[in-house]
Length: 287
Image 1 (cartoon, one colour):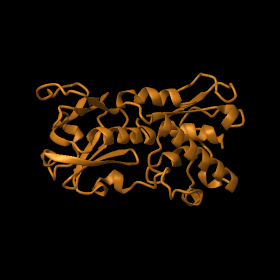
Image 2 (cartoon, one colour):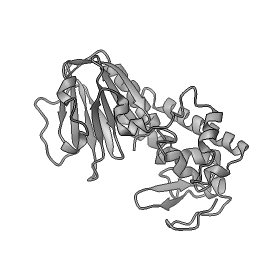
Image 3 (cartoon, helix red, strand yellow):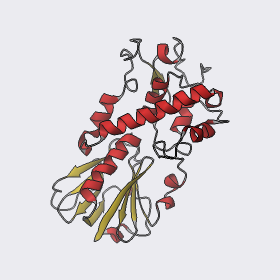
């Protein structure tokens, strides 16, 4: 799933390629992708793109008349830039293409989604906060006003485990499964440690790991073409998706805990005092 760093890079890429250009056509191919009907998609046709913004993991294309084309790529969605779009309209079918946006230059982009679980979402709204997922977002962890005091206040009283708290978009916007693993590894903390149990020193360590991990990932992604962002993300990950490989910090074997629809990766030596976490959902969780 694209997370804050990749969506930030897509925002920068689209700012360079879209702002100042006119949208001449928006073609939904998969019916499931469109989540709003008023205003209709045709309302942005003929409109100039004036800004591209990011809200957590949401991309927001603003047009001259104040409409916002807001996209969430979900787990298996992606944006593919085309220097030249194919002639003729795309054919609906069983392929991954979900929506196409064409510019007056002949350039544009496709939104695609792999797999059978169709969760990619496109909204056309007058205000980004009309999108429920945007309206409930917590603060952006890279915002200038997101300081350590604010972070500590968010975690105070949180009886959830750190892994779940970091992934909660209503608590902190933009962090998903991959970067929560990376942040916790950098902080040398168990994913199952309770957020409310952190000491002030631990809160400081986690805050620094959060900001540094995301900032470094954004810098690695900056200037990377949209089509190469997925590969760039994978090469920068130190523990996530690397089950069975040696930890880059201590050399211990990276382990995994699997859930019904996701998994987490961690280093026992760096994060859990050398103790493997039980890999079953109803286990007693190690702190």
